[in-house]
Length: 175
Image 1 (cartoon, rainbow, N blue to C red):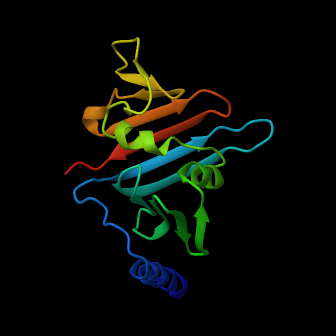
Image 2: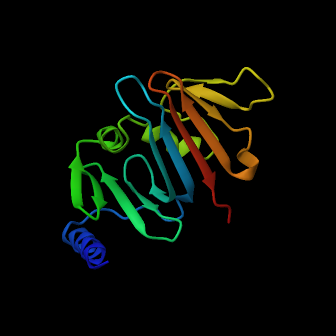
């Protein structure tokens, strides 16, 4: 517990030492997130499940991942000049968000697109195609099939079928 408190204190102090613009207020999403990377002949399956609090946007923001009891597992922070992951082992810097997700999950996730996908819309930064099946609302973008079949209930699912298969599922908290 002391080590976690020291990491949080160091993160707060390092945040005070560098001046960066604040994260836009009111631009926050929270809920539960599961990322599953299917096994391949060269690697084992990987699964991450956590509560999340996502603030900001693709250019600057913060993602907190916590246990169901509220213990912070990790915090990712990014801005145009810094991408960092803070855990109980300390802070690790990355060149970009793709590199961070690849290091943590073994696969890169389209973080910039996730901000829009979690809001039930395609990312404007790449072409998208609506789902062909009317019973399965959603769209295809960046090689991912995004399902909005249960969006009214706060559920979003995205699946990349290219090997290794990756599935991202989120259940958003509704105010």
